[in-house]
Length: 178
Image: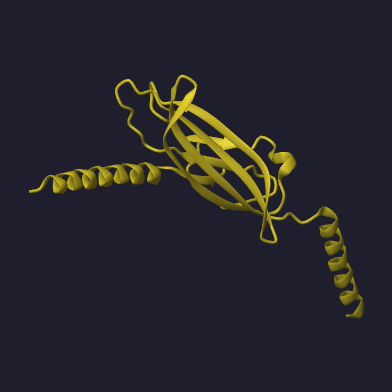
């Protein structure tokens, strides 16, 4: 077999191995909204008084000898109004790989009580796995995922009061006619 064929076969093998490694690592990362810290059950509709949490399933990654990677995750929260996304806030965290590997994490938007609005929301989560060579980061993997959820509108107390008063008035009117 000619020498060029060997080089091509080796290149193809390395390319496919690297592509498989990246695909497997990306497939492990996911972001979903849940009802509380510790929950892994996805929740897509929240009441106005509920606080959505993000469950972040971080990528599986096996470190190499002498390699001490770090994981950086950020999540940007957007409110969607008439199809327009409005940036609201960002949360993030960093993790060291050693001694226990990267750990799945729950994140809460700190300012939710101030920012919450009824309607649709979207969260973009992204990650970077890197090592540091002095102060220069060597990026190993990056990726991301999106989660959407809805905050249900709560009827205003005044509206309920007016509606109730109207019903009572209609019932009274009907009885007076009988």
